[in-house]
Image 1 (cartoon, rainbow, N blue to C red):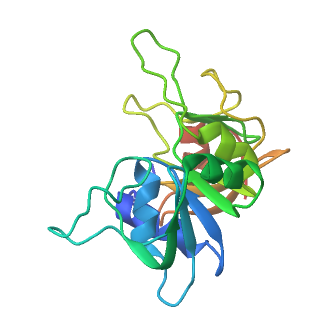
Image 2: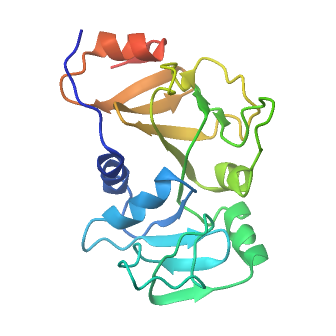
Length: 214
């Protein structure tokens, strides 16, 4: 069996941030994706948008300097960069639906090998569905990336041949950034971009349960 170490949440956020191009307009979904804001490479201009009506978000505020009137869609305090703006959330959704975002980074319960996304409900009894702006983002952004742990707490792969949870979008996910590997979703299936050091390709395919083109 391979000997490897998973990426921490901060390392994963840094890995995602590394691929965001200069000048990109980006929405970071609730949960893990918000950490990406703290890892934008110095000197790279990335304009962060939040569906509750902010453009030009900065990194998380220093402890003690939080302003709870300035929050992202996940109700976390944020900062505003010079030139940033607030506006009605209807205008924010018009940005999202109108194809004005280059990238959105979302969490997921399941992603299919061909890029179908399920991230708003597990459909299980007692689960509280929360779609928020995920459907608008998944279809409206020029690229949809998913950031997640590869496996559930029970050890099952979140990357599947076909999603069994209610769908957010069909064929919308271009890349999956996980704690073990970065993968591209293509019409032909999964393609490897990179993986953590020491993880054998065969072991990664075993964990995912699907073929991965090297």
